[in-house]
Image 1 (cartoon, rainbow, N blue to C red):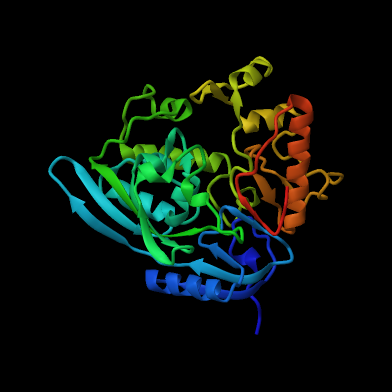
Image 2 (cartoon, rainbow, N blue to C red; image 1 turned 180 degrees about the vertical axis):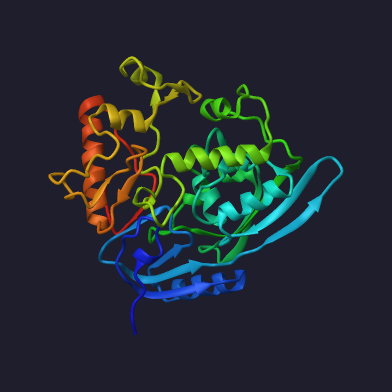
Length: 354
């Protein structure tokens, strides 16, 4: 029997075979598959959209469980202008955003075009263009692998941070303790967007930061901006075969940020902290868009920075996970040498270390 290659299930198109592959389409099937693997003390890798994973070329030695549960459930809508909607963990995120915008549910439009599943969004507190999912999540239903029980979290329990949440907590075996089953959102009713918080998006829409625009126009503009940066998966464009942003934007003590060169982006991050731009650091450390395409690069041109955005490490068609990591290390080491700042990978590395 042929083995399932993880390269067919990830947006970076790398990864070797799964020792065992299962697909779960309902909450009950997800729980049963997880319990079976755990009772057998078998390694378990959970995957849905595959947009935030880089898996070793050697593959995965245990069970790979693809969460394929889909569907939306309108829980309530009230005269005060709000709606509560539950989304199954395997439901494609951008399909939910599109549905919300076209049904006049406001609040997630700035998160258009992000690949992957809805269940993955609270884990990373997925965000873009001044918005993140913590701003609209009402509750998250999970399977607690240690307690062997369903557990529902409200936002105050989830400890949301920049690309972080309690849901990143792992078991003693190093895999996620909580498996997301469903995410419930509270959204405003109306065709206007939430306040636009990102300057680039505000300029594109012709509004001031903090003002609102048509949610449909916000979605269209975000999709255009993301596509211009290679951040919307397109089978015909190798610039989009990536995990999106490979590195998170560093959050630095104010004193450290003061020694950054003039012109380096600086954004208040609370508690005496400053956020700067990983893309700016990479480019100013000598790695321009398209870096790696030259024949003498560390990966022979098989992996490169996107020609549209310096945060995306792309598979040019024959790259391996080893190639992607080799380029990532070169970028990380170059930024450290130039600025003394350590970049942190955003995607999960399975069977690999940066």
